[in-house]
Image 1 (cartoon, rainbow over the protein chains, first blue to last red):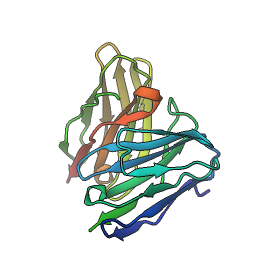
Image 2: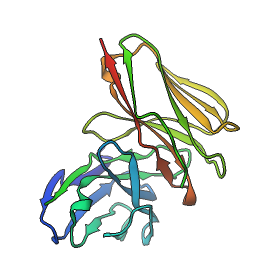
Image 3: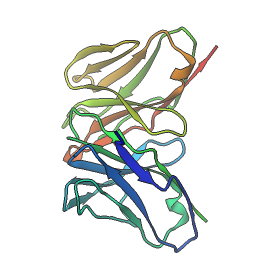
Length: 113
Length: 109
């Protein structure tokens, strides 16, 4: 039972480069989320999706894009990477945002230099 | 989103009891989650409270007072492996959970 799978685990980007963080879940969850976590801080919501074809902005969406073409996959795209995007990124999924637990991927540690 | 507030760091002794507090804004309340996060790892679910009172799960219990906008996580018989960050979260706008900064708990012998 894989749960939520994120790739890559680590990545170093140069300023201005682009990349896609992959996220896949095998639990048939409707809700999927992307969070970033900076040192000593909680999780900040970047984007979320309530089902295939539907995405919406979270608290800190600038510099990111997402798509949800299938229930399973929710990739996060970084265009023109900036040092401020150095962070740990977590993908998560759940049946519902209310009263059900969210399952998290193992995270992607991204450094922009 | 929700305004979540919790202490930054706490220390406790192995075998002791520790209480980690969390306050949130009461308008539009839709329940409160607690997650545990070990250093370098993903958060894992501990509890969800939507009604007032204490819910116990083994060594961990979670309490909620909706009128006071207050919750706490109670950890009994502390073990070294309980050293972790404990995240309080509550659904805000669009019902998506907003997380607090987390409380780093250090358990020492």
